[in-house]
Image (cartoon, rainbow, N blue to C red; front, top):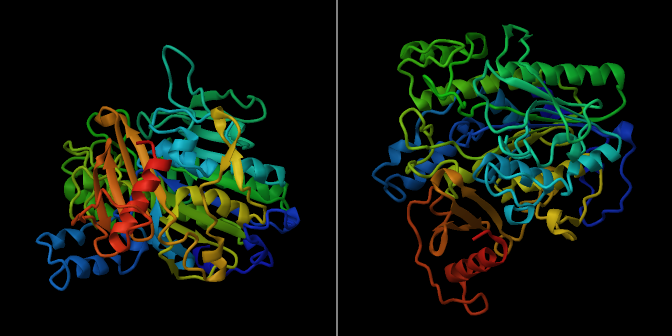
Length: 528
């Protein structure tokens, strides 16, 4: 299936890229529309899956090596990513985006993806916040156009359980327009084998769900297990088969959100786990055995946090392979990470071991590249294989992109949520890059993207990053403490630029003008 994705060409390929400026253009008939599968990994940054971007490590080593910055720790860049042959193949079969930002935490990213908005607009600033159910979801437009829709896996947009109030008070999958949900509404699993399955369907109502013990499932070559990643993969595959058997002419959209490679709630003896041996390739099994980990357990032996991140991500890769082998040809597949890799600053809870020089304090939950820079690949009908784009992009862009892939119009404005009224869509469709050879979907200097969150793990630190195509501000709590970087020259943020705090956009040029533009965007759009 991976090889087919890169070369499949459907008659709808060009229609699916109808210009965003013509929202009233006629959409294809439902029978002509493609299926769309969105796959979201959990806590897997670009560092863990750098094999999806061939040459990136060499490029960074040249930038920071003797012929460039001559950084004394340049050797840290060439580290130890996970083994990801399936994701590498998916990337080669479609278009990779090497300049994609997510939000620093799971739920703010998911809310931006679902609504096409920034944090200030959708209001989900922390991993505990609930998305107001009045926000516009792109899924409703798909449903209205005849798509079958379902969510499998982690939702994490309805808030968290509340022992003194309402559990999950925010938007749940059926309220977002989905037909079916099977997974978990909360942020993390107790363990991968001991968890409860939550379901929404036509019997529950849009704001209710039912809960049942974790079932055991198997896959070809994978023995029966309650491992949540296996169960949810099997459920997605079953649902796709049912669509083909029951409604072969009806298009579908699947939202498949892994809990891999997120730490578990139960951290005794480890917050991470060693997957079953039949989920791991030979390279990964050899590493497990060398450090004394026990398969299908949280008994990690002498395996480091960085190693267990690799093990869990290799299992993620294996399971994506099971899905791609049965995905129908007329399907767009989108893979994206939800935030950067964690660096919690505690033993066995630091996971970055590749791509970055400075790692401590720069992972998930921060506005540094290590917290915001995530892999994105889109493959399917009409997308040439092997494409690589440096277009500035954001998870919010998937809202309009998915609608265009479905041949549907993209709204200029969406619901303002609890605040009422309507507000401009923040996301930009990546269709021009995918189909028309465009280099950008944003004006390189004056258009910006944001990564922002409130980090409850550090006492409520407000973290904000704002960037245009080249320059970036990294901020925490105070605008006065922002750092300014040239990402073209210094993509790993090692050498801050001087800041001209007194400049104005009208009077400045060059580096100063870009700084002023970013400061202006910070004042107008961010949560600081």
